[in-house]
Amino acid sequence: WSISIYEEDPFNDCCETICVEPKETCSGTACPIECITECLAGEKYYIVTNLVDQVGIEQEYYATVEIDTSCNVSVYEHEANVLMDQCTDWSNGYLSEDDTFGDCGILID
Image (cartoon, rainbow, N blue to C red; front, side, top):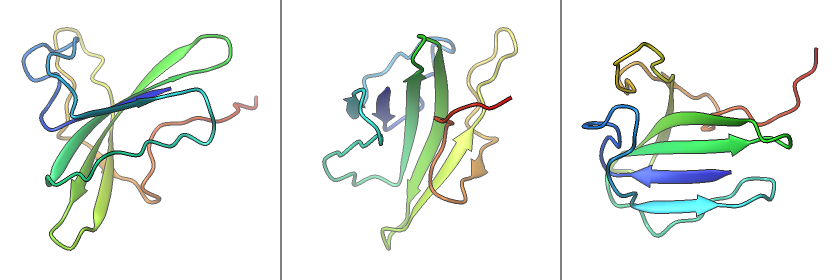
């Protein structure tokens, strides 16, 4: 897994490729996933997370994290925009009920 935290939209100018440097990054293979950063003083951050399963299938997840003046944190999960020639759309996110995003679990048919 890897997590990158950005202070601005990382796809703003490049659409399919990240074109800004992250403020923070974390990576590893252990579970549970834990990413500890320096103090984040801004109000909104863009998160890009990559999860790879045991057979090498990679999935990318997107979220924004908003921190209000009382240090309350809200996590909004965003869908990847899969239409051709479209940038990732950060405007249509939905509030996470448990402040998590992505899906790292066992699929059962």
